[in-house]
Length: 129
Image (cartoon, rainbow, N blue to C red; front, top):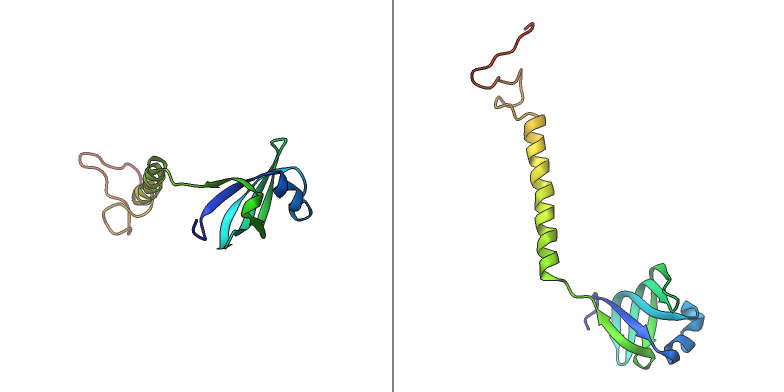
């Protein structure tokens, strides 16, 4: 696994026992960003702990080193091509909507944003000049 990747590790009983003083007891999973891997040790900037009872606690990136023999399973977050494409399209929609709103609301009257807006063809404005 490469540093900088989001990952999680499911701890085994040995891991729960030996990491008890660092992260507390009954932790089933440690999630975060892999900071470095040295031999069989993984240092993770922890963002979330999940407990055996299913509850979780958020952390703010404190590094915790976990030995490979403390781990039941390694989980690496993979980007889903479909979800990534949907996120890109959604972002493009927001930008496009903002541009359209700017054109319609502010200064998109065809005369450089100065003076009164020009009426659509075949219509006129009533009122005082």
